[in-house]
Image (cartoon, rainbow, N blue to C red; front, side):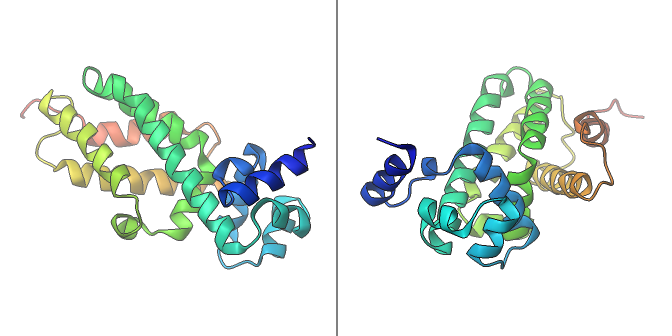
Length: 198
């Protein structure tokens, strides 16, 4: 069975699963949707470097495309968080470094989410799990004396997400180097690291 026929079968039998979009195409569509959130299917296809017919074969409608991209984004965020969980309880700094690098490696996804869901609306759009998991990481680090305790874990999460979105945006506009994980890490950690009283 050809790849196109397999894709059609997947779309017919399972309602356009996230896996029906190839990884390279997903990233191109994230970037296109972040750049032009209200673009038509034809405009998104052109920005992603494919024909409208090809995009239509993969997802059918703009609603299906949005659903696939959102589900893929949630699954990817969950995987990023799961990968850092093993370090979070024993080495919160290492877990945070891993999170920063993993997020920046998914810059198209982060730009897509930032364009669709302003940070303050994340809780209302099925991203609550993400914020809660980040809160737990920061809280664990606070209990271990690694992160400042005079700032709530929720605020640390908000600052982290805001810095992350800002760095991704700056990279996309050419105002920050592609290899900016260390810059973000240092800027964030120097502000939240526990300090001895003066």
